[in-house]
Structures are given as structure tokens and as C-alpha cells.
Length: 197
Length: 197
DNA sequence: GCCTTTTCTATCCATGTGGATAGTAATAAG
DNA sequence: CTTATTACTATCCACATGGATAGAAAAGGC
View 1: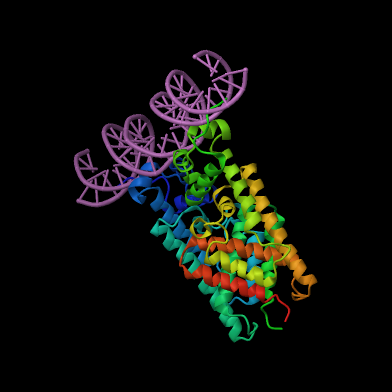
View 2: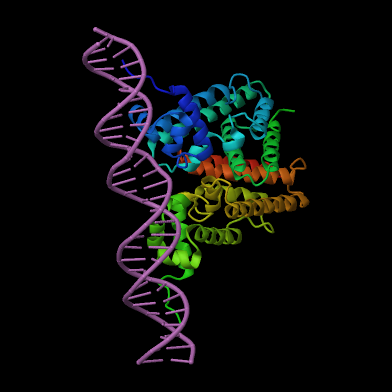
């Protein structure tokens, strides 16, 4: 009934993910998107509704994947797991390609002002989900007596959010290769200091 | 010998500071710069060498001011002062206009990739100066016996950098008015927890 | 009062942007 | 095979950008 597309949806999104990572939303032109995704500007308009709509689709896909595969598991993570998770972000590839271009959700906080509700909603999703994971992990650790009495899970989760966002910023700043590692080690040490002894 | 400029250097920089805050470097066009600074695009070219050079001048001015007036004082700050300094950033105007548009140096980390050595140098200046202040404060507190033996000043300073950058990111994310306050409180509590009891 | 120097005004320019459109090619239902 | 539907190719467009340039205007030295 209709002509087939040269590039299927999934691989187009995959290509876009990579490009938006490297160039950022504003830095990625629609011409580049054509090349990297295999889509045409025409298809970008007609079936996705333009550059921004397509970006939102890409961001949604990223978040789905991150929540499923890269966020800390609220049902199983111990404090040690959490500490190692932080270490892993600075060292290699916990979030995909983080060492090159960071987390796409974090990048969205940086590169958009808050004028677009659609983008804001994704940022909110990112932060609240992450915070929920942290709270769950701290609460469980607490109920198992694995954490100091003074550590409040809600405050602790907020600290963890900030420590994570700080890590992303440090990695983006790239003043040295050592800084992210040292910082992550310090953050991990902080978490481990919450354990009951 | 020569015609006088409509706008002097200092007030031009002040106007530019405000504009770059609100719009970011890439978002501030040279036409807007004309309006907000009183400079003409001609003067921007001839005496400052273009938009980017002028931005760097503005950023330098900002950093000078921040170091003199807004960074924590390494000679006098106690841990309590440091905790309150963090609280102040989230609450009002520790760094100028931070509640509107954040810190210009932080924004530079976010909105530039690392391809420009001139910008990188400013970012490095920002982070190393800040880290030096933190180390100095922690070391002095330590030598006065005001801090736990387990707290390492070097690691602690890195944590503080991350906590601060995290706070800026949280403020930029603007998911709620409460989040920055709560987060800053948690960070301040962490610092206060370093005190000897 | 002229002259040199610098800024100002007013265009002009090349480039890149996201998007629109018209005509063509492919694809599957009938 | 015809036809409807969708995607592809190739332009075209309006707009905004940073920057360049030429001539007028100010301002102080002589």
C-alpha cells in the first residue's frame, strides 16, 4: 500500500541518540540528522513532526533504556552496590557512552532552558525516578540495619542526586582525567561511610 | 583625538553579563548584545574582536568578582560558615543572580564543549580556585581540631565541588522550588556532620 | 579652523537553520 | 494492471546569525 522506508524506526532512533549525544540538541542540525539516522528531512517532518518531536522520542527511548538497564535496582542494591555504581559511572560505561558525551537526560537539563514543557516533563521523570530508587535503596538498607541511624533516607537520596549530577558536570568539565575518578571515589567513600559498623 | 564611546567598558560588560546569564552564550545574539550593552556591532568587532572575545572578557570579569566577593574565604571560614554558604546559594543571591540564571562559569561548563582552549582555561580556573578554597578551609578546621579525623581534606574538597555543581544543576533543572532548598540543607547537614563532637 | 582618529549609522554579505513543496519512485491492496 | 498511499529527491524559502564595509559624525591635538 505504501513505499517502505529506507531506515526503520529503531535504527533511526539509535543514530539520533548518538548524534544528540555528540552534538547536543541545538548543535545537531537536521542535515546531520539525515546523514546519521538515514531518515530524510521530509520523513522527519511528516512522520515525526520535526526535529524537536523526534528528539523527544529519542529522549524517551533513552530514558526507558536507562531505567531498565542502568539505574540502580531498588530491590537488590546494597550500599556497597551503590558505591560501586557511582564508581562505575566515572570509570567506564554505566550509562551508555557516558565517557564521551554524558547522560542525555543530564545534557537536556544543561542545554535547554525551562521554556518547553515537553522537555521539562522528561527531566522531571529522570530526577524523580532516580530519587525514588535512591530512597528505596536507603530505606531497605535501613530496615535491614545496614545503615547508621542518623542517615535520613530522604535527605540521603537528595544528596545522592546532587552527587550524581555533580559527577556528570565534572565529567563534562573535563579539566583532567583524574578528577572524575577521584571524585567518584570520594562519593563512594561517603556512601560506604553510611554503613553500620 | 578620537570620538568618545556612548557606553564605557564597565557598563558594557555589566550589560553583557546580564544578557549572557539570561540567554547563554549561544542564545545571546550580537543584535541583543548591541541593545543590552549599548555597544555597536562595529565596536564589538573593532575593539573587542568579536562576540567570543568579548564573552571571554565578561567571563574573566565575572570570575574576578566571584573570587573576591562570593567564594568562601579560605582564611576565616569555619565548617558552619561553609554549611551556611551552601544554604545561601540555594536561598538567594550568594553568587549574583544565581536564582535566575546560575553561575556564569557553571553555565560555561554546560553550554560549551571542550573545543575552545580559552573557555577551558576559565573553567579550569574556576574549579581549581574553588577546590583550593575548600582544601584550605578543611585543612585549617582540621588543624584546629574542629573536624573528624576520618575526613580527608582533599577528598572532602572534591565532594564539596561535586555537591556545589550538583546544586547548580538542580537549580537549573527547576523541577520544584523546594528541591534546591532541601538539597542544600542536606548538603549543609553533611558538612556539619564533619565537625568534631 | 583644520586634521587625525575613533565611533556611529546603515547597509550588505555569506552561511546555516528548520521547514515547505512539487514531482517521482516504490509498494501493496483491489 | 490499476490505484492509492507513502517515502524519496531536489529544490526553494524566510529567517537569523556573526561579521564586513563605506561614509558620516564627534572630539581632541595642533
